[in-house]
Image 1 (cartoon, rainbow, N blue to C red):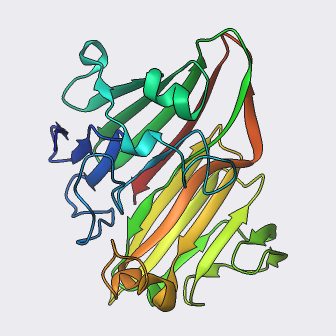
Image 2 (tube, rainbow, N blue to C red):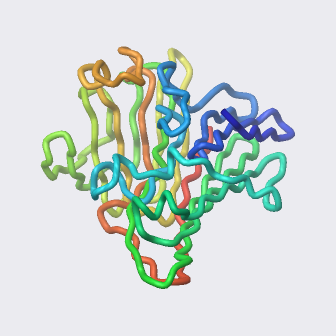
Image 3 (spheres, rainbow, N blue to C red):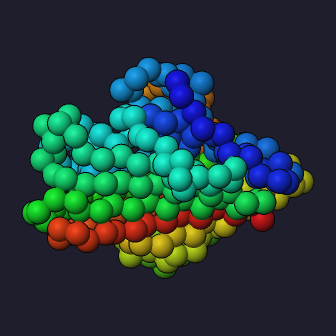
Length: 271
């Protein structure tokens, strides 16, 4: 399957699948892989890839009539060569007859991916190119690799309410979020823009600063042992080595009038 590889002057690297504008790999300067990618992913045209950073559009999860997470993650995107270089790629998806059968709107999506040193920046934009307004939900569904899910926690969510999508209850986050409670599926609305993934790897400490703009929500997801065992595109123990921290726009859909553009971004920095 066609990919684009970005390489920076200090050894940083990223690999992007043209299907879905899907970031598969991010290796910061002087470090190893920071994203989780399932060994059981279905590498086939039109099939989603489990891991990396899928682009969710125009529907998050099953919040609508489309297939789960919409169609952007399984369609071929085009590389905008006029806006790309060794450390930046801009990929574009526009409506066509196929998308309009599913979702009768005219749009242009752009995803800009930029690497520098130990930083990764993802910027997703949507332009309404039609003559009628439309609403959509969206996310950058980032799968972060962890050595042991029991040693990983997310800082910055303390004091925030969230919807627990496992039991559909609204709850409060009183302390740092440790990802050890089995299945984890939480939607934090109107979230703070700066979070921190903190993982103890033996005597070493790994920290990734996670920042977002334009997206109002954060989704934290791990399938846990029982659900993971039912997912054919994950290995049975895959849940131990990943944690999704997603920049999302789902509690309040984006409304775009003709000619309007929306922009949302997520940045990761290995500290």
